[in-house]
Length: 71
Image (tube, rainbow, N blue to C red; front, side):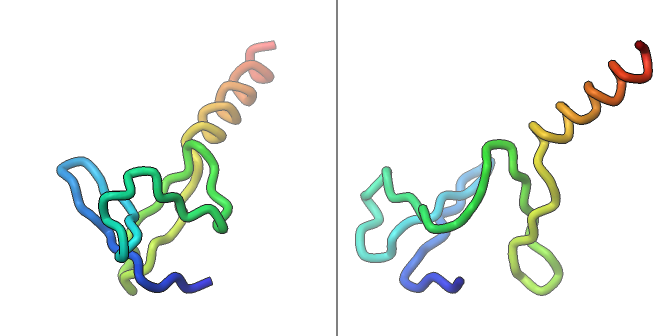
């Protein structure tokens, strides 16, 4: 899916996606994409955002593996 009329506002420690028509709308959400809490993205060599994992799920899986190994 391609979104139009969006801005990326950069901060010291990240960025926020804003609607180009109303940059004061602090509650604007791009809600037709599937992301979860803990998802981690990076900007790839082609300039696109790439999902590289989910820190919450990675930690949960590591804990489960550890608990199974110890038991």
